[in-house]
Image (cartoon, rainbow, N blue to C red; front, side):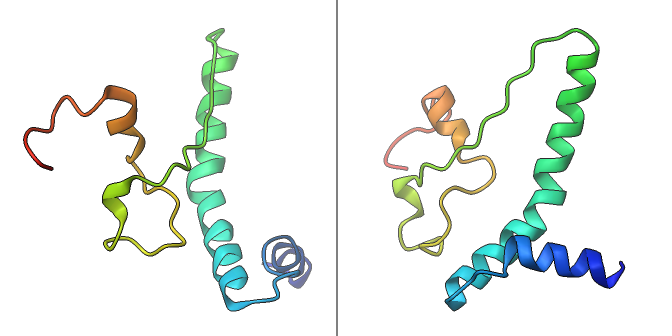
Length: 95
């Protein structure tokens, strides 16, 4: 990467951070955007170009089961929306 690209990425994701938590969140976004968001957008464009309707969403509801297991700054992990979308039909008992 050229220094100009690095400078732009830094400014976009971390440049205005005032706390360590904001630096962490910016770094997580800087890693997550190319790994998750860009690939999701690319696939959505392929489907759109094939004439199909496309919908994207970002799930951020923290499930109560995350308490004490997942750090507080994590809103929702990958796959957490499944229980909300399908109503936990695959869980039995006190899970």
